[in-house]
Image (tube, rainbow, N blue to C red):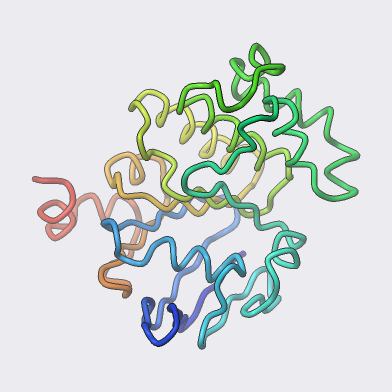
Length: 235
């Protein structure tokens, strides 16, 4: 599905990512873990075309995406739920969800995907005519995830979905993501600081420290790793 090799990227003369290599398999949840400032969001921006890498390869289903436009990458089936949600707060919930149907195909399947979105997050149907900016933070995150899933992604990128949310809301969102991966074959790239919750729903994970991959392995292996326990889990 997604194969990143030797990715280097940064801002101006400042390099942030150093030879990043990761893989995301079909129908699996892969977690990118690390503290604030480790380079996680920079990596996502490089994968999605919002930041042009200085070198390296980003292959998606065999096609090279490095230095392609964000729209081209979106059209390939990579859909992101950005950090901070980035909703249109004065628009209704329904209008925000309609923004997820960005292509001819997704527009054609909007109504059926809208029904599925309401099944994933029943509160959104109750709030359909309500301005998105009046929702709670958790409900807004539900809108952002549902909007992305209405875009019929092949790869769903969740960038820091737990920030500022109650643990039960985070659990609901991650349960939807893992269910979509398991039952519908959507691959998920989960970028998280909350390592405990991320590893609980992930199949595989990578730990980024100072812009480099420090550790990688199955989620169970990372949970048992002494460095992860001491540095991130407080054990």
